[in-house]
Image (cartoon, rainbow, N blue to C red; front, side):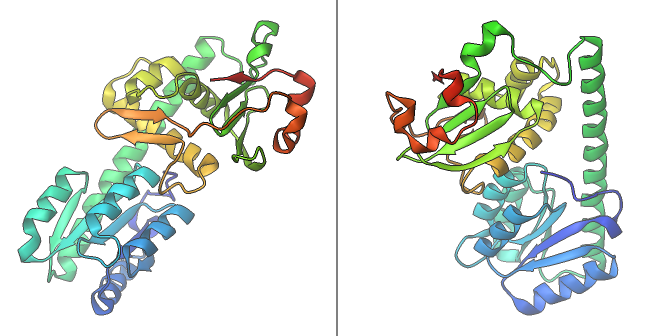
Length: 303
């Protein structure tokens, strides 16, 4: 997730997911008085659409929703925005569900009906947690950049002649141009669906996942192998999850239902793309001809 600016409640962006209009509006008024930026969703599908289109710091989520229930929304939200904090609403009869939601990643729960003071307290606790997490990620990023300098890593990595044969990596429907930091997603008929520019870190991470497709890696394994960071499991999650989230936004047709980078719950991530046939001659594939440098280079490493 890209934090929208979690430094204090007035800068926080909050999504309220509640199908009951009166409750939704009442909670929205409380958060507006706290100077939060508030958006509302009346269903699970509406909430997922909003999460896909914009970053949020906090989501207040009713467990009982039409179309897609609250537990499923939270599960998918973690795929879209790994660092999103979630507070769940529940009635007395579904208290056990609230406990289960907290165990699954929600930071707090509120039992309906709840007072304005209870809502304010829960939101403030969640935002304080977000602030601590953001500060931790900032420190990790600064440390990582310092390590790169000390190790003499160049900001702009040019491929050596020995690496030229692997400038282009292809795994299933994805083609990665490591030299230009571009990724292309190709349809079954060889036509390019879309392309995206990647950061150097995203290239390193995606390249490693593509080279080892169908293999599940933990966040710590990915941090060590792709970034050369030897950190704890918790620190590795805070490093890798935002990168995975940004990669999905760039390459997945539907980031809420990933088809390329999959989450294996409790284990990590795996690149598993449906394979499509590679044309024997590149000039037979109109989509591949659109990729700059591929025809001139005339080499494609298929994983």
